[in-house]
Image (tube, rainbow, N blue to C red; front, top):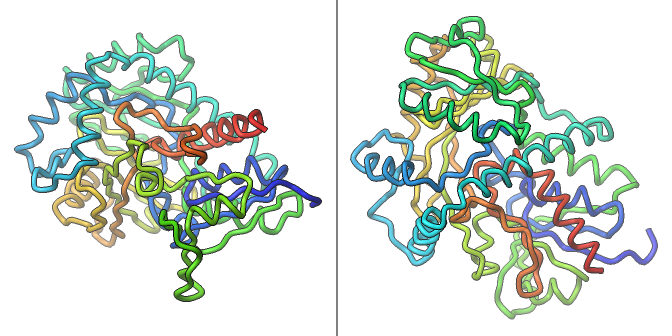
Length: 398
């Protein structure tokens, strides 16, 4: 491999793995994570590669809904007024500020741009790299169950029609997709969207790069700490490095640590918005298309291996990983009301989505560290494009 420059990547989720993919052919890349590949937010997300969902949340109507949802225990948003911290206050203030400055149109167009680029890069990668992540090019059906939200959706379709995102109106007779459609008043279809298992993607891409000599890539289970301490060792599966030492040992350090980026780079305003999912195995009776229920803010994905996953909700509870039964229940209820699956043998899961106040990712160099974080619920959708951008920016600065 010669005397290649070395790069350390902190974080083994989709941001870290895709960043490694774009750099490991030219640089010596070492990836560090305390838990393993894709064992945190990239473990069991909603699965959608969804250009159709590339719309930021910074609108006055969403703020109004947030206040309304405070009194609803099964609402899509759980504000958790019992949990307060400076990071939470800073993030909420930033969200309101981003709404007041009216960047909704620009920021949504930016996320659509990233999402479309990522879709193109994903297709290219799938031709070059032989990995299985149960990808299903089934398209995504966006459904609406009240007239007000459907009217708003039609205005949104017209507003962003020129972006080429591919959302079009479709019929509401959804039984052909194994979806109950009695209360659906409107729907859109995005044929170019797809679904895939993010955990399989990350693990298999990491394994592929370690085995293919074209990539100078390796992975180690390490905990990274921000202190000025030298290396200390506790046991082989929990080795802790200081960022100071990483910066000494590597030419560049890239932080892809999701919501935990705030611990390593405190100036980055990224906050954990907890999401939940339930997963059914052998779901042969499930929907044959991916679904996004706009009113419930729930997504559903049928993977190619007959696994069916339903995900949603947003909970502002700081770095709390607990799986609350009252947040799982709306997902299970949705399955019962909208599909023909009549089982309760699902696997529960929760993650901390890394979100910025304006819903745009942070791709930049901050105090000597490269950062790729903040894509939130679109981390899987935009991941390839964000990694490509960081890799290009890094190479241009050389």
